[in-house]
Length: 469
Image 1: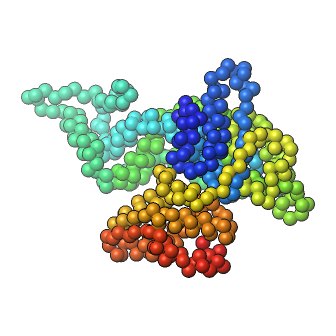
Image 2: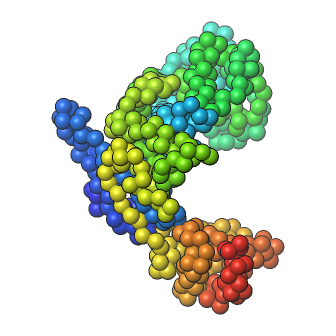
Image 3: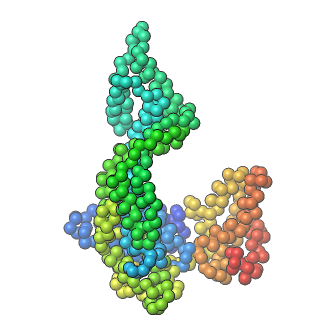
């Protein structure tokens, strides 16, 4: 995915997002520039910083979805934060540096999941061996030899094979019974059988510490304190009795902890966060504008000043180590209907050199949103109701009417973009969704008359539609 050209990136985004070609083109170029930068010499690479972007457009037009799909496309650490959650230093609320700590947590979890997939087969074998040990413990004197052959783990025991005419020894009988149990276990015929295993748990000395409330600016210290206490009070073994199906998941997780090199994972995660991380800051317009000097907006400019060094490039201490933000890509977004980007402090404006205005959605856009994306709303409702043996059939004129109603309501009341389709669809299909499951198999045709029959009265009464649609 990292080798996708800008045109290919836009084509991938087109599978999920309708329209907004200018915004897609801009983020595709920003993404491709990262790939180009990694191919340069280290001296020059260090001086090339990402060009941060501000997306301007009404709610529901695709700003957040573009950033989210972009991050999934390249498997980069990505978080979405809201600027309104952060406050100036000295006020009660979240510290802006917590967004970097949250991004780092996401990066570590992402790399850990990838490395876990690589050793999952070995972890599953180790878990099954512990289950077999609980079902049929090895006799005294039997040792186990573990070999890795072509990436797979093989377990052998130092028990010679029985001669054809000789009486098998107790160890040979044990091995034969164990192999029979292994076959039944792998065939899934023992999932409900209960076994007793030893599992690890946290020491009781720190249970109270874990329960300490970590609100406001103390929330990040909570994670660091937890890590420190875990090192001081290591986990203790505890006997637990549970079905094999539950025990396997628990034992696989313990095996993964043994197989994974967390120091290596953290190093790789920190590098990925610093070089490929993406932070989407929504509601940027809510902290724009001059402070009024009183009320809840007193720290607007303070939040901007606190965000500025993060975007400029600074070092943030996390529980995994220091993280540099010089090459993290920041994408800000906001409706900017009460304010404008020029209301931001000049220094912050300079750190977002690229600006793109997203278009308000038209009737034709709504029509395409209902049908073209791979996860279009019509496809979602068809799939949901198919589980109740209800077949939905959306006719072209029905889709046209749905799109027209969504556009009309957005014009007459608050424009909430594509989110209006959710309220329209739920209202149109309300009776079908309620009756499904009781009425048995049936086929429902959603045409223009059906849509008008469900929405007609509401659309005529504009005052009522403001509250319902």
